[in-house]
Amino acid sequence: MNIAVFASHNGSDLQALIDGCKDGKIKGKVCAVISNNPDAYALERAKNENIDNYCINTNLYPGKDEADEIILKILDSHSIDIIFLAGYLKKIGTLVLKKYEDRIFNIHPALLPKYGGKGMYGMNVHKAVIEAKEKFSGVTIHRVNEEYDDGDIIAQTYVDVLETDTPESLADRILEREHTFLVEIVNDITCGKIKI
Image (tube, rainbow, N blue to C red):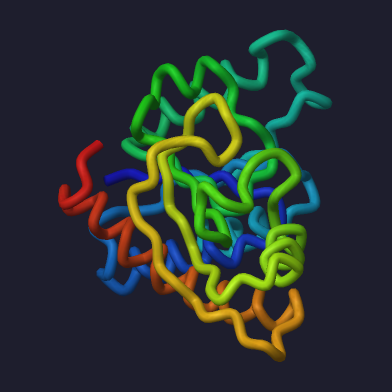
């Protein structure tokens, strides 16, 4: 399968996907990387791997649906089968959602439906989990729809919250599990174990 990855910042999940494809742990190939942030290190990761990469945002393409139309052209040019959001902090546009319905997936660093929604990303999630004195957190992979973190959950994995945890230490442990879990689940998608 041809995979597009959307990422806004560091792109460590993107790197896990690239490595998983290269190592044969995923039956697919990352063909395009799209970011809304021109300074995203994810774009550098893509360049280092000779993967086509693009910065598309409403500053560059301000017209209604203009950015969406550009993204669709890019996806079409690479015959993309699935899209994976890996720390992508922009809402997916209606045109892309419609064309790729049920084929856009997101990874979230908590156990949805708790600790999801607008503003619940990165360290905000881990702070909320610790403040609520949760015994465990984890990683959720879900389909993307028009609402933040609201699509059908396809897989979850659990990570214990330790009494000594800070948001940073919890984030580190979740991210480590996130990378391996992401590869497992994307492989299940590309192998047909999870239907698209």
